[in-house]
Amino acid sequence: MERQGSPIGRVAMASLIGTTMEWYDFFLYGTAAALIFNRLFFPSFELLAGTLASFAPVAVGFFARPVGGIFFGHLGDRIGRRSILVPPEERRRATGEPAG
Image (cartoon, rainbow, N blue to C red; front, side, top):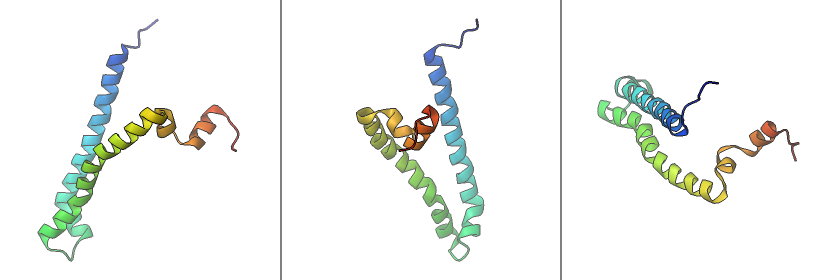
């Protein structure tokens, strides 16, 4: 029987993969915002204003993530993480409960 690895190792690997994907996403969008989006989406703006406008979603996502983590972490601690992370219709589908 093969060993699956320690729980700490699995958590660390999952965390590494998730963080890598998230920062890669920020990197790709940031590069595209700096080089392409200012002219593509804001052609009537000046170059600096268009660049700043194209970086606005990055700033919103960067600052909203910890706020959402605090909010949903608090709810998850009070109500239960499964109730917060899995919508009710998905839970019913996974467990075979009838819709009601």
